[in-house]
Image (cartoon, rainbow, N blue to C red; front, side, top):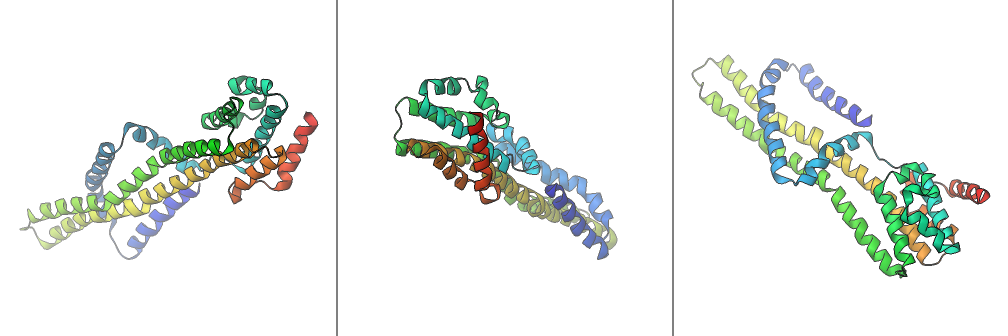
Length: 288
């Protein structure tokens, strides 16, 4: 919702100020379709040229995600901590039973209790792969931490491809606006014998290209890129919580302490309180 409000406010302030200052929208609306064709078409064409198929495939979903906002919430972090608490307790009490859960998470009653987490392939594979490695005696906490760090860094790098591509488009849009403006000037020079009022309109139309390129770059595309990057970073922090708990578990800390380490790793505005997590764990212990 905030994204749509931001776009509406940007358009209202820019064009509202222009109209209140005595500007004539007819000049802009007459030139807009042609300038948009030149600038928008060139921007999309260069975007297709400069990016891989993977980036192109994730561009539209990325834009939708920027408007929808972060996926994970404080409640999700609490659920993740509870899930990991249950798995770590089983890993220490009965490693054979743990194999049933990590080899078939879709059929696991523990994973099924947290459907939002089960639906995320990255979260599930991160948990199961790490616990499977530990069951195979690959349990050096420092080696596993290094492995998880490299895996998360790769995830972060891949997640930033679309925001970076959109930022590059934003950087190119002002120059493409100049291209459109120059073409407008060329057109105007071809009609230099026309009366001043006609030439004025043609020059104004040419300048719409410069305006449009700068406006699209700094009013829409660059903020969209920054918004998407922020959403991606917040969602990726969810996996840092998983990493923190699992590494603490390999260090053989008490299970409740492992959960507290993970809670502290969550971003502050998404971090459940100590009492909230303690109450959730208390309920799990009652069920067990």
